[in-house]
Image 1 (cartoon, protein in one colour):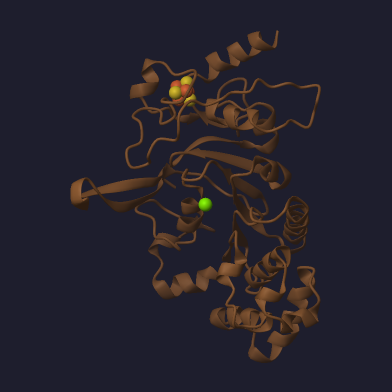
Image 2: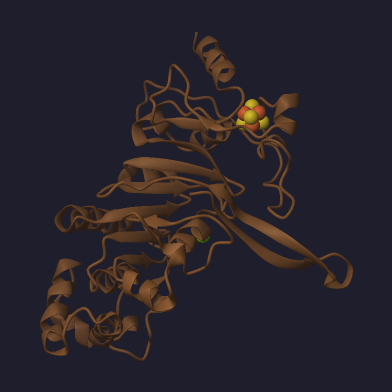
Length: 328
Ligand code: SF4
Ligand code: MG
């Protein structure tokens, strides 16, 4: 709720002035148990920062993080450590977070030992089980991380996350470093595990193809703000925010009977240190008017949208009208 993460940075001549990067700026959303909610956006939009802030890996500047009704911001360090069992994260490059001097069995053993979830005597059996659950052979736990392929290493990262029996897993670009066929295998594994183990995913990705494959709902972020949130089908079939429309227009559509006009955005993403006034997208938006420069649009739904579908744009109605006429 109202999550905010600002990073202080030095700026100006001789780095004397103190400035702030508004990485996440007043973001609110809920994740339902058992679903996959994705956050998509270009690099620097605040999606990873949001994921890390939710787990308090980076403490938010402001806001609340409610996990099963409990505000994690109010937890002491040791209570938070206890809670971490229930909330795990998987990174883009598991290699970077797997100790190269440890065998896989030690890596998994250590994760369980830190969280105190499985008694020592039971851990070897649990390690064999975890290896199988993620599609590896139990005897491969005797190997070191470098002896595995990228996809296998990601499976080890998943096994480590699962070792403490979490409820929520934040997947931060979890398949982005993998080639397309390995990506599909890992995504299918994640889906299967979700069903078998009642997992909830917050899935962070810049890749709309991947997001389309795995999500139930999707959030689109731009410069630290949510610009659109919707069920997957609504988002991909009828995107409402001009930024979402531009992102989607850049990917091929599976249904060849539909065509979509390519929307090419002007300019670069502005600096999050000094985001544009009003609607942060106004400097690049083909539909921008005067009000967009001064007033920040609310995230809202409107008559022709599902209630669960919201976009932060002053001109949702007008843009939908132009869309109708351009299809005719
Ligand atoms: Fe574009 Fe204005 Fe809508 Fe922002 S509020 S997306 S600038 S039309
Ligand atoms: Mg990132």
